[in-house]
Length: 294
Image (tube, rainbow, N blue to C red; front, side):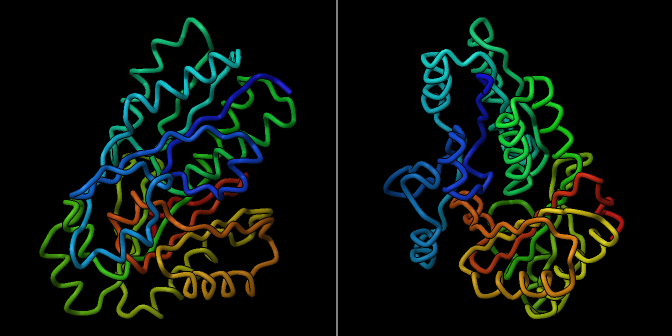
């Protein structure tokens, strides 16, 4: 096996078992509460955040520079010569830019390719998984990078929110839209523009949670129609029952799905979405349509 390390940030929402089995290096973002700053997913869980939501809505921030340096120092000490990094959209966070600046100090020791995925959650996770699989197959550094980049291009990520409240408080959506949506029980289906801006956009707005869950399934069906061997990841934030409902709907209508991944969102994502999120990320090697057309 070649000396290629895969690095990502905590918002990739990868299952813990995969991270350990493939020695994926994780750089945690931060969750800021009034009493303390916590390392995402390491020192705090989304359950702990939601228990105290009536008292406090935390904020989030970039990784500590020390945590980024620690990862590169560890790789240097282990004589790793090649690093592929996949990170949260630079239009959603400054994480990619910060890591890029620090990585410059290590270019004399290793080849480093950092990728702004223009996405979030398992949109990043799919690319990490495919890159790690390529390393196991003894692919070259350039081949691993190409596989990671192509995976990002062939992945679509979208999610349903139970309420717009937390996106409003995080300054990511207009307040008028939020007030109307909450009054009318509107559930937004939000996509991530992986093709262009790397920002959130609204795919649909539907009334009622059950209809929103069915809409997630309908979008999946349209995306993977006549495709082969797609991988579907489903994530939740305190919504495992609904996550499983969507999983059952998707599975009952498809025989062309190679694998399913069930996971939960990281606390940093949970702060901005609130409880009740159900999200889907689909990777298909053949490519997928632009969700902005839906």
